[in-house]
Length: 277
Length: 323
Image 1 (cartoon, chains in turn purple, green):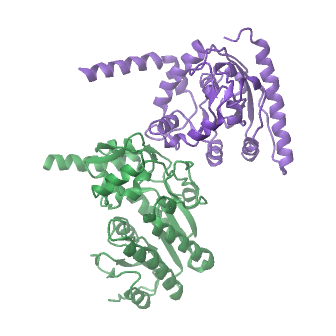
Image 2 (cartoon, helix red, strand yellow):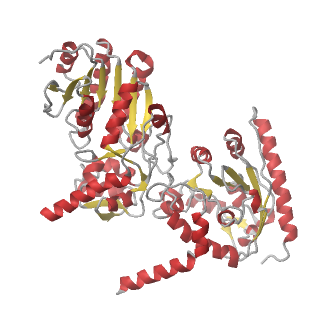
Image 3 (cartoon, chains in turn green, purple):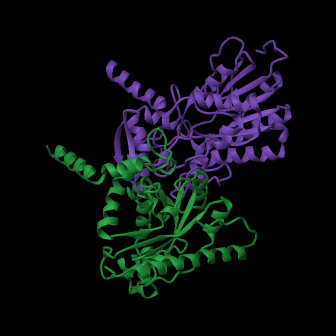
């Protein structure tokens, strides 16, 4: 009897989260999978639907996301979605992923880069892979772009997500890796300015020594362990195209162009925001 | 022993002839070529016209075969598995045996050598990207000493590949090969009714039917495009799903700390199907990019995952019905 009850609960949760709308969206995502529904990195359509259902609720009801410029994400073909990183936990990645997957102009599976220690954690590693996450290895990115996938990149990395609240909306140093990928694989960059995620988990201090002891990239002192329900504004900019170039100084210059574009998109979001929560 | 050699036909020596893959390769080459069968385990019963030898590659008798027959090509499939003998004997047979084979190939002017390697040389690591290229570092020896011989066979073959281009060496690195008669670790494992799985880990895997692998080897021989190639399909399945699809029941064993599953395997003597040194391959993925081989040789596997798994499923049903 107990197992029947459990099964029933699972089915109900499934039916509640995986609405016909989600079914339809996922079915129209251009994403080839193998005979058992998996891709080389372990992405699985069924698990993705379930997680998308849950994340869509957060997107609509909890963070009440306002989004502009979704038409800038190409409906097919390779693309790097480059955003500003913030909020300690990677909620910004989740929300950009939902925006891309529910895009009325052509839903996309936008893949997130996950930290390298995740695959060593039982269940979690496989689960994140099933949702489309892959470890941030340049080989993975290159292979995915060659297979015309969409990838979310936060070139600031932990410098962005772990920064303190007093530094909110200030872009930290960008790595150049994403620009090399864009140039080498002839991939357009779609910038996205993310406003609101800084307020989901404002950090006052970073307990660096403790973080180091625990092997974590950072350990902030925060008012709440769960992300606060801040309103989030996503502004996607026009695709930026970069042809190959020789020296690293030029690459850095191109990265600065992307940063400049991101600052404009962030400002746009800050201006349209009327209330934090 | 020497057969009347048909001078218009090439002579091909095949090692590991008692194995299921070599048998299939021999069946494909027979008639079109003069085939010579060699194995260290037993003298293989072959059809009329196929000389068969029981010999260890690193022992004296092996050279006699080269002296007696004028060999044009060698297909080196024979490998001693970890569960067959101890580490020292395995090293001698696999590494020194391969070195001997390559030296004899030079001495007797063999024009082509195909080396059967394995995806395991890449090593299973949490940090592996998917779709590993042939240029990726071979990290298996970092994972375990029990795979040092596989990596060394590769590095030997690589040295001869650039130093002696006249040998036309082709190294094939297939993913997991399964099918009727296959006696490698993964095949023995999936033939069992109860199969260990690591709690919380189900790495992606690739599987190839032994018939498709035999086709690949024959193509590599006939087209002669020296180099190193992954041989794998572009289809993927998590290990634990493969276990279910093969009709096995899962036996969950604790996965952390990493010592624990290794100790369990050692204590219960699971050497032939879930050996301690292979535990990491049931935890982390090694997914190959097989594009270069597919394109160079215009090859595509003809059997899909379900064809492969259904053999193991049916085996169990038959066992149940008769037992």
